[in-house]
Amino acid sequence: MSTWKALTGAQAVAEAMRQANPDVVAAYPITPQTPIVEQFASFVANGIVDTEMIPVESEHSAMSCTVGAAAAGARAMCATASQGLALMWEVVAAVPGLRLPIVMPIVNRALSAPINIHCDHSDAMGATTIGWIQIYSENAQEAYENTLLAIRLAEHKDVLLPVMVMQDGFIISHGVENVEVFDDEAVKNFVGERKPDRYLLDVDHPYTIGPLALPDYYFEIKRQQEAAMENALKVYLEVGKELSKISGHDYPYFEEYKTEDAEAVIVILSSAAGTAKDAVDELRNEGKKVGLVKPKLFRPFPYREMRKALEKFKAIGVLDRSMAFGAYAPLYTEVRNALFESENRPKLQSYIFGLGGKDIFKSDIKKVFDELLSGNLNPEEQRYIRLRG
Amino acid sequence: MSEKKGWKELMRGSDLPPASSLEYKTGSWRTLRPVWDPEKCTHCMFCVAYCPDMAIPVKVTEEGVKGFGARIYKGTVRLETNFDYCKGCGICAQECPTHAIEMIREEEAVKGSK
Image (cartoon, rainbow over all chains, first blue to last red; front, side, top):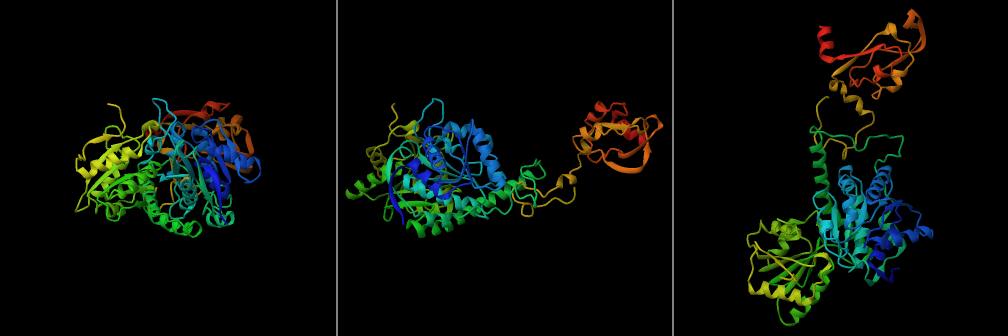
């Protein structure tokens, strides 16, 4: 039976990790991720899980440890944020090529400089081109469920890729919500045990992992990685359907909110989608045809499905919580890409908001909808929300 | 190496079957060649132990082989360097107590053999 618990987003992810009972967790504290491994360390100390917890001296070591454990055959997890992700980058980039199914919760935080501890997506958006699957979560409940889903997705034989599960720093990681924690046995049955088809500690079947591959083989190995990403699109839905049986929730590529007859929609990730839904509700009450699309699976990006969902609208505002400096913002880029093949391309507008944890309010979202409905749009211009001029 | 495999035929990721480094003949990297003089060799096994590529084969012999001081050396003895794998690093020549190994330029070795 599931139980309702008052949990922060960080604690909710720790609950998912408790239920999955990984063999190894290696991590280093970094704001605002710290409460995930802090909570998990208490589970280890109290004997609630039998995980080998390895406190390390840096994030570079954290991910190195996790890689070693995963290669040895363990279900190994790590968690980080912002500067921590930046410091472990060298090893993070190696994981997809090694095809190790590591799940790493990320608590999104702005990257230095200037130094800042609050939420934006610049940390994870920097890691969108190296082969990690990325799932974004709106709230603690989603972060919890996405972590469970991620474990099965990562370890699926047709995928075998690492997954980052995102939640917004402080807004979600430190905010207490009522979270439905599913039945331990049901979750245990769902995640099961990791059953690697080969692992380094299987001394009867030795093999080499991580050798040098020069121009004669590197390209071919990378093409395999792309095939695994293509598979991940399908497997994400399959695993989601299985999780639905426990949770009663759906796990689509993206959530559509009041888009049925909408003329103007905004596309937005993570916690700000919650604020935006309130704005949509209020505008709907005023009779305005507005809606919202919230991508969940960002890598691999479901271009075809996104095109089909978005091409029926007249105007679309894409709200990014990070910039790509000299290029279109990350989410805007993907939405624009998705719509290129459309016969009826909607009018698009790119907005940047919330960098370094700057708040966004319902009134800001309403202004965006007013702009979208008025048609005063320039798809080649980036607009900024709550930026002082 | 033989015919190279396509991306669908390779093992997943960069994983490789065991002992496959034998197929990778690093001898072509060599610019210096160790020339071993069996008559100066005491078969002390220093070169064998120090060789980073295990490119010096050994065998066990009852009848023995002739070496330093025109003596017969029995038991484990070294054989000629395996040039498929010797990269010519020169560690064997550096460590040899009897100076039985001399490093010469590879092109001179190739010329000399013609």
